[in-house]
Each structure stands twice: as C-alpha cells, then as structure tokens.
Length: 92
Length: 393
Image 1 (cartoon, each protein chain N blue to C red):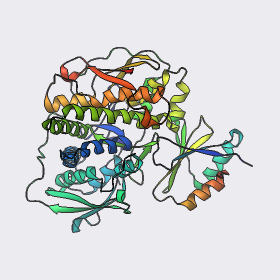
Image 2: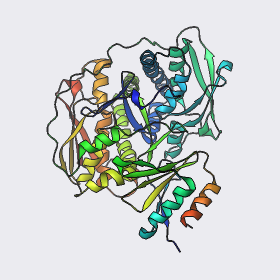
Image 3: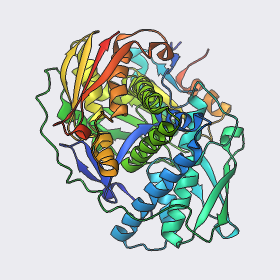
Image 4: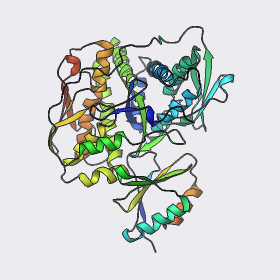
C-alpha cells in the first residue's frame, strides 16, 4: 500500500492545482512509473527541477522534495486524473 | 517555425531588465493583471475599459513595429499569433481573419478572472481587443476596432472577436521616440546581509525559458505569468489616475493601485513561495526566518521590474527597499516629466504585501492592510532612487 496525499495550492495557477506528497522511499519508484507512462522528463538543473509536460498537463517536481505539482491544462479530463491517481496510488 | 523566440530577449541581470523589440518587458501574474483590470474598469464614472484597451493597442503597436524592423517581417500575420502566445497571453486563431473574425482558445486574463475572488459575467478580454487593434494596425496598416462577442469567462469554449474596419485610426499610434534604456541609473546602497545568493537566483530566473506553452500560457512559480511591455502598465496607471483626478478621486486611484500591488505580492509571491521552483532553487538557501523576504526580492529582480535592494529588514516589523530604475518611475518621467509626489504605486504596495505574506497568518485576503507602506523618495521627484518602507500598523 502506497501512502500518497495531496494538498490544494492556495496561490494557484488554476483552482484545481494540487501538490501530491509521496512516501520518501517510494518517490523514485513512482516518478519512474510516471516517466515510463508520460515521459520524457525535462531537466532544469539551475532550479534542481524536473518536469513532464504534454498536451493535457504538467507534472513539476523539485528534486529536493518527495512531492510534485500537477498543473492541468484545458484538455485535462476526469479520466486523465483517474489514470494519474491509479499510477501513483492516490485515493481520496 | 515561430517568429519569436528566447534569443530575441536581451537580458540585463545587473539592472533587472528584460528587453525585446527595444522594450523592457515586465512580468506579472494572472492574479495581478486581472485585478488591475478590475480596478481600472471598476469605477463607472470613468471609461476604464477604454483605457485598458487603448493602452494595450498603443503599447503593442509600438512593440510589434520594433519587432518587425528587427526581424524584417513587414506584413506577416504570424507575428500577431506568435508574439501573443510567446509572451503568455494565450492563443490566437486568425483562420477567419478574412471574414473579420478572430478567436482565442486560451486566455491569461480569463484564467485570472476565474481565480479572482470577485467575478464578472461579461467578456473580459480588453487586453486582447487592444492587442489585436495595435497588432493589425502595425502588420496590415488597417484601422480597426475589435469587439469581443463571446468570452470564455462567460462559459463559451473560446473567445470570439469581430473586426470592424474604420476610416480613421482609433488612437494616435504615433511612435514614441524616447523609449530607451539610457535612463540614468544611480547606484544603490548596499543590500542588507542574508543567506540568499541573489545573483544565482536572478541568473536562474532571468534565463529561465519563460514562454507560452501549447496553450500560449506560462504556468511557472505556481501562477500564470505573462510578459508585458512596461509602457502598458505605465500608460494604464497614468491615464487611470488622470481620469480619476478629473472627478476628484486621484488619491483614491493611487490607493487602489497600491492595494492591487499589495495583493499582487500576496498572490504572485505567495505562488512563488509555494512553488516547485522555489523548493528547488531558493528553499535550500533559507537558513533564517528573514531570508524568505530576501529570496522573494531576489526573484523580483528577475521580473523586469528593475534593480531592487533590501536596505533594512527586521522580521515581523520593518522592510526598506530601494529601486534605482523601477519601471513606474522610468515610465512616469518619460510620459509626464518630474513630479512633486512619488509615483511608484506598484512597488509601494509590493513592499507591504511582502511583509504580510511572510509574517501574517491566515487567508491571503485577510492579510491585506496589516502593514503600512510609504514611498519616501522617488526618482520622479528628482531623488537619487526610489525608497520604500513598510512597517506593521
């Protein structure tokens, strides 16, 4: 069982922007799964930051934290959210 | 291939300027931009919508004229769509341009209005109307008026605009000749000490490839950012205060602009502070409570706002900022000459808002007004720099 929780960001890009917090020892595994499913990862070394972006969303992650932010785009659907939640093991 | 790209920027990290098409561009977020629009348009005794659209038309006409010259693309409509999305305002579709119709599938301003605490049910894309009027004038020479007929803010799936041909220019599009950056920049007093590597932050943020994505939007630092020619903000601010002064409300207008900036600090810098970018770059530098303010001000130095130093800061109590070349002072002097009163309302509001963000608790809306800020000296008064203080009320 993977323990993942999320927090709505108060100063949001959109009102449905969340940060997902991952268990420390599962962080690399989950991010690898995300990369395999949605990759490729783009690296921003000055920010110690990695990001995956496609037509529907952006996943952005500081390498200093076991968390990532999911930024939705206009084409993002509830089905996309279900797929991501299943992948990272998140449920409300 | 896009007509505009990152190589078109000239970055001056030492002076905090980011120039494209001979214009310094200022970065603000969707919260601030939509709030500013609401302020300008909110008073029914003046025509705020006209101010907003006109200032956009004139500012972007000039910018596109300069870009055309630099890039040798005299009448290519593509520059209209490419610039709009590159600077983060969304996407423009000119497929029906021949039928005098334009639509936009994504909008920085609509996103801002959707996030704001105060809603409106009408169309909100005045910036786009002005942008298109100026851009079409520049690229085609046509005198047009643009009207938004449907807006995503009203629930439509795209914003739609109609082009009306005019016989005469809607505005005075005469190019201003004084917009250069040889503006005298005095040196700043030394910055107070902190654990923040300001130079590294300015370098990283200023060279970040900030440009519109496939939606023409710039989701960065937990907000939607956009680059705006500084002329736009200056013209809007000056015209707004001038119009309000005609009905005896100049001071209230200035206070409203200060309050918008205070909220900008709470939202924009709140977003920055809570972002993955902050966690990766700046959070590791934070060793003491006061460092947060220094980190936020370091980011501000990379937003095209000019060079800003913290002269003094006592946690929970006071903050003193100094600016040697802020865009407001620069623009005011260019437009109106010198003044007997300070004119940098944005930076004044930011000074209080930063303190409220970092040291107050609770909802952001409830923090506003907890600190009192003042612009002590101002370049517009012929002082050597602009000096801002904030202290707890």
